[in-house]
Length: 137
Image: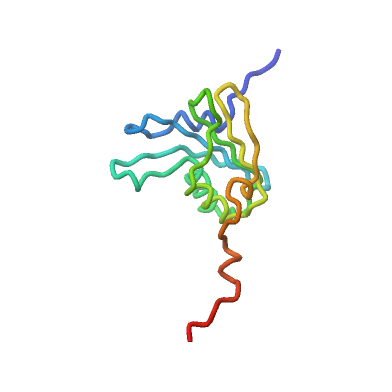
């Protein structure tokens, strides 16, 4: 008998706090050692203080000492389109590398897999801070 398993990102979506937009999002982040961190969106009456699911999951991982990731999967209730990370989340993900997978899903279980570098081409990251700068003299 086959056992049905709800993906962790879909389960995380159930905990979303989104009283304003009613747009639930969940994420499951996988570290290189297989540890999984989940997150959901958390809205705030002051819009710019809300947190996306992807940033919640990454922040949880970083707060526990993780800095390198294999993949993140994102889930929402959108049936017609794959859920895609916002620009802020793309930049947040990029902080931790460009060669890891982003699985954008639909409720039916279908998904699209892209690398962070494909979602945020010609990006700015930690290595750019080490590059030679013009003198201000």
